[in-house]
Image 1 (cartoon, rainbow, N blue to C red):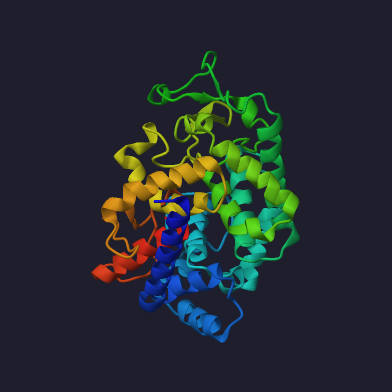
Image 2 (image 1 turned 135 degrees about the horizontal axis):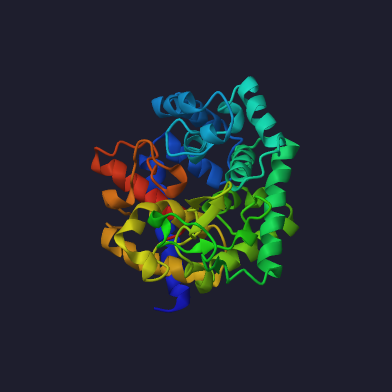
Length: 358
């Protein structure tokens, strides 16, 4: 088959996927489709969005948003942590103004404005809140600037640092607990000012949802950062990076690396099935030859779950919905379809495939 024929087939298949989704999806996926099509002003969008706001799942996650903002209420695996509750509502396509009351918004903006905690996790928490608010359409200038500053810092690291592919140091002189000695030690120079110099999945999530809102110069910087992440040398780093020093002599496993499941043999073990469906549309947002090759690999991988006319029915392993688990680790993939019905799972699977361009 020629490349022109392949492109024609892909276009037809996407049209079939879209038609199926329009006819069969619930209000959450319909809202996301409206937004992907750039149709947020029509009466049909507004009516559907009003129905979305009344879903019990929306009420559940809104009730889980913490009433106070500090590192312990923002970061963590609990449904009641900000990173999961607010993240879930963003994944449904809600706006910040429909998630937070004015008083609660002020609480989180005050947290973003306070830059006194310069620890790795304190800096991450501040960035995550700012990025989430920005994704949700909040116009606060400080939140936007925190996102821009992060892009600037990552870009500078990727372009100028001699350490960008040399991130580990020997543990000599560090009192690393026995339980952690199998992990590599990330060079403390990469977080000496608090901000973690390496890209995180948080960055990919925020960039994928806000790239189109940014000036061309920042879109170009994001492209350079994504090119670095998609480099095989980056993907060969240990998943989760390794250990970071925290406090006087404490060590934590950093986690949150921006790896692409199935990119190489190491990333192809069963564990990575659970985060694949979450990450594949995020990375597929960006134009990069390695990402295109990875997406072609995913298309072959998911062929076993293909039904007909571009429809998919992924396994439960690929569509996790786990209470009190990390949203950014891909453990909350439900889009409020009725998964007890076969059609519900097909709708969600096909939407993720459509979004990722499979």
